[in-house]
Length: 442
Image 1: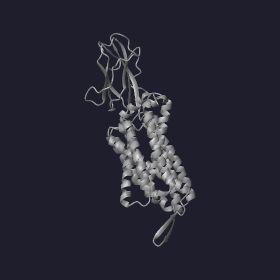
Image 2: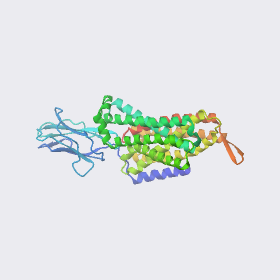
Image 3: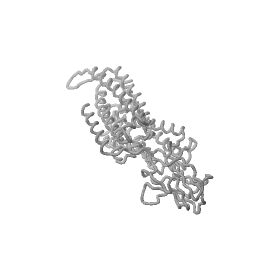
Image 4: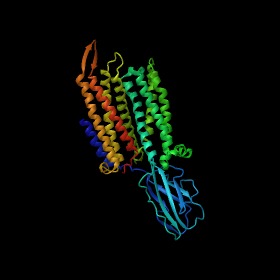
């Protein structure tokens, strides 16, 4: 514990002193014409410079006159060498008058940012602008709730898949247990279904449209053009491969060489599933992206191994297989969970310090308050895990016979503690889902 605290203190000091935190979502750095500019002649194009490279997003820039008539000719393009600068051409010979530029970009972390700015040609009045940066994303409430819910369910799906680590390292003889296979199948199915749901919801979510737009093929096409859509397709492909590999990995009678190949394949595809989450969230806004994305991969992977193992253990404790001694299983998982908890704590500290604009964000923004709730949930999990560990330690009885040892524990108390841990894990994952759709800047 002393070493862990010392490491956390070192990381905190190093990260605070040596690197700038990530910005929240994409921002407009400058525009041509600027907001409120009065011009003597109509420009050939309108361009904006963003705080990050979001690519060319169709329909992200629109220009209209006072009657709402489109003044641009589209499409959005990059006018120069700067990847952060995008523009849209205007109709030739625009008459004098006021024009409103509407922008709607999707950040690298998959969240929409909208706003408007205005300019005037000639001596006419200026349209009242809604401001260079929108205060809200303007998403439809129903779409917003569904998107967050499916994020939460996708996390649960990955956690269920994370139970494979428990099966292979703590309970290797459970491959033929129908409950083990069922939980892993549910994980693969839930991860795939939620990926499809995220794919069809992202278009309406980014465009501020309602649920009726989920079947809009144009919005789906826009989603597939950006990194978020491509990573969702990667997640679907990786889950499909996992769905093929896992039954083969758990099948009895495999040679060690073949089993090792299946294990390596499962690890690679599992990494790709985790990457599809980490590369679409707040970590990608970090100026030193590999630090935050790497920490997020460790954080999420450790949670999946820990919580996925808890779920597998809960089912095993509820109805053990005939003649199975769960004592050694619990002991092995206790060591695995200890390493996972350490990884969760360290990587979580790195993420918080890299993503939050300042320490005061913890108590001055909604993001900080949700993060504090998540930390409180993690602390409660550790407290219950301590009860589980004591149930194992107090109930341990070692009987040696011919060089072997049998370890037993207080299973009744352990069942209750592990069940509580599972419930708390699900609640913490819910907070994590809300956190991913909340801007670190408040």
